[in-house]
Image 1 (cartoon, rainbow, N blue to C red):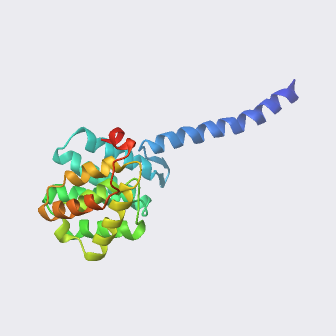
Image 2 (cartoon, one colour):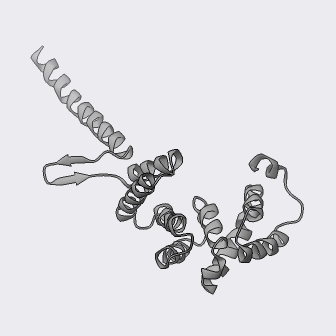
Image 3 (spheres, rainbow, N blue to C red):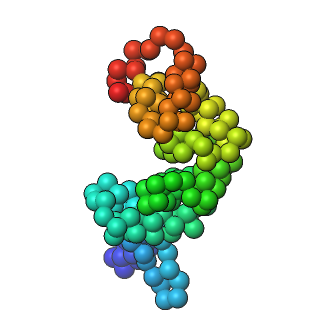
Length: 194
């Protein structure tokens, strides 16, 4: 009997550790910060989730501040993730109505890190076209290549809608030219993504 209890105890210990690890991961991925004395743990995806949640719920100055803080924290933990970088550029654009030097550099860096980023494509194509006069030539070429490549995927309808919705006059002209470059006949999938 004592032997059975020892074996049960030895088997229960790893199971309990796995349970604790899963609980900690769940908390961290939802943005909770876990401390163990002087050491603090958090995950970039938790900060990402909070930033997206705040921006999707409200548009007040406080929500912009929280989204900025969460995006900065996420970028600090995951410097190669383009979404927080582009969200910071977007927040600058929303707050100032223009592409600030920091936002411009964030856009440039996002293309330096990934010429085609399926998660960030729509955001950064729109950001670039809405601020076309402020985008440097090398980045303009990268935006063009990404937009045309994106238009050749199953998401063609989404890029067509995006290009048609640009408000900036310089960006509208560029978008109209790009629409002519996209493959001729819309595919069946265009209707599903509009």
